[in-house]
Image (cartoon, rainbow, N blue to C red; front, side, top):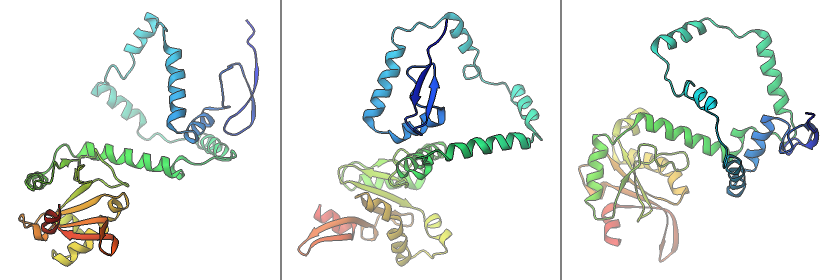
Length: 271
């Protein structure tokens, strides 16, 4: 059977190409990937998802394919012996100059296409990638609050300011930063700061002046996202007068004040 050949125009690089697939939109996989990145909006994704789901509806999978899938590696974990064999085979393996040249030429060809933008140079995509990596790292390292964070949680929930939820495991990322707690009712995030990791490694002594310096630096990204920021320090013994809160802006008799700070005892009075 002779297949029909179609003349198409690539939606990404705008070059003409021939294909036997009538539904094909781009000339290559890389063009398809970057075209999807460009069109990354909810409506476009809905169309793509609907098309793919419609194609799968009513489709029957043959027993042979099911059997092959079961034999796939992701269904059968590699044994230690098999892993060791793979490791030994790769030791001392060097990529040939010919292979390096092929990789280099294909990459140069890809970036030379008109309209090409590296995914990490696209601010929206870069932010998504960084947040995804940060979440996965934190989740792998932190499963539950440490002793200081547990004490902080008890202290915060004793203030009658609403529920403070622990999010220090990477479940919430704000402007590339991970807070320790969040109070959704007050639009407030809490940073539980240890004196060594937030003062000592910066060469700062433990005193109120240096704490204010670090608080101003660490609250910046959260204030930009319009969150109120409350700091609890490790050496604080529950004294609410020593606990500071930073606000993106507050309304006063003089109008709106930007980056206003207050102590917790004043805040509880006005709440």
